[in-house]
Image 1 (cartoon, helix red, strand yellow):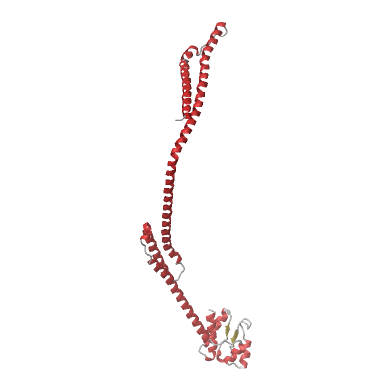
Image 2 (tube, helix red, strand yellow):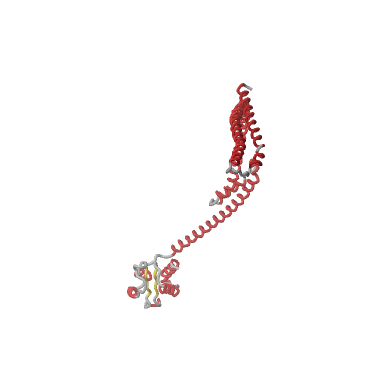
Length: 323
């Protein structure tokens, strides 16, 4: 203990003594309260008389004396208490400072080690999180193949399925090995279904393409078999072999259509010998129902006449294009 702390201790003890004296004074005054209370509490003095006034003044003086002593003791005891508080604060600050000089080097050693341990734990946590993230990413990649396969050809999906089936779910998946196996199984099932769907779709497309090609081939063959149609009445009449007289009669019996609306319009005149009742042939435009009926009637009536073979082919061709 140095001189400063020794002096502080002396002052503190002196202040404590003063405070103790004040407390004893309070106890002394407090012990007389009962007597004063029993002697004067509720007393009504005859202050209207000289004697009563003297008695009241004397009673007041007797009560005031301990009250004044109480106030004096309060002040006398409070001052050392305030000083005591300051002395205690200073003493405590000094002691604390001295203790920290001893404690801080030890604390710094502990703190440095705790930081090393915290950094090591943070690094372990980082490495662990990275390890888990990589495994999860591998598992996600396995499941992602099913999404990547959407819209791909059957051969591509088959290759993707083979790749999934070749994945080795080994110990590198660690605690996520079971999850990886389930992902592989589910993805393989999905890819197998997508492969089957793709095979069926490709088969359907190939069959449809084949049907279209066959239809187009039939149409080309049918079109090649149909002779070129006459462009007007005179050409048709010449092709059939009508005389000039018959041509003139044909021209007078045009009943349906007009050259500007049809590529060929021919009326077979009822007056032409054995050909029979009049009929209409219109190629290149859709006719009225009466005209279509006339075409069918002509074909059904003269289907076996060699001279009308070209006309009958034209009628058949017309109905194939205009069902």
